[in-house]
Amino acid sequence: MALSDENHRDGDRSSRARPLIVVMGVSGVGKTTIARLLADRLGLPYAEADDFHPAANIAKMSAGIPLDDADREPWLRALAGWLRERGEAGTGGVVTCSALKRRYRDLLREGCPAAFFLHLDGSRGLVAGRIALRTGHFMPPSLLDSQYALLEPLQPDERGAVLELGGHTPHELVESAVTLLRPVNGDLD
Image (cartoon, rainbow, N blue to C red; front, side, top):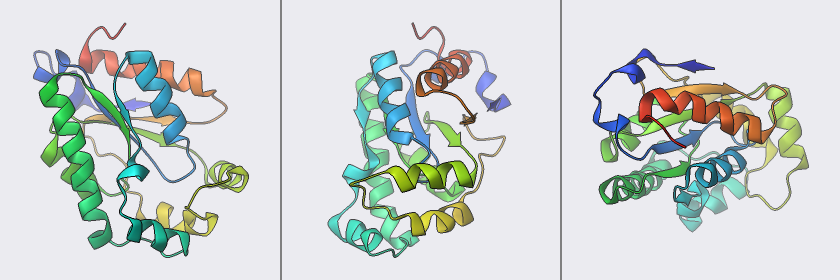
């Protein structure tokens, strides 16, 4: 688990505000599970990024065709708007989003500069096994390689942290996330 030094600045406005968290990573890492638990743990609104995809994106992914940047842009702008609204309302919030590329995260930050990216990371084998067990999701296992190919890790100047899945339970990961968020957002309990 790594936390960018950028997140330790004292007096930063975000340290006094309710957190705005993007739970990110490739499909199958457990974004939805962790984001829901984290939102519940912190008493924050929650949104699932998949709900923001237009029907054309879902149809494309269901057919095994990776989205391109033109497909993603309106989706990312809608997510950035959701985060911005939560920030303006002072409620904070947790949203899932693959946010695989730096430019996607930059677009989210355009709408919400205070966004904190919590990158769930796991081995390809672990994630592929999870996807194989998943039912009722439009993202086919065949697109996992394309997601790993796109993934650009968080950079030191990005507000965020990496949580390694390893053998940790979802509840352990959430408590680790809360610990990582404390220097950024103060007392979260």
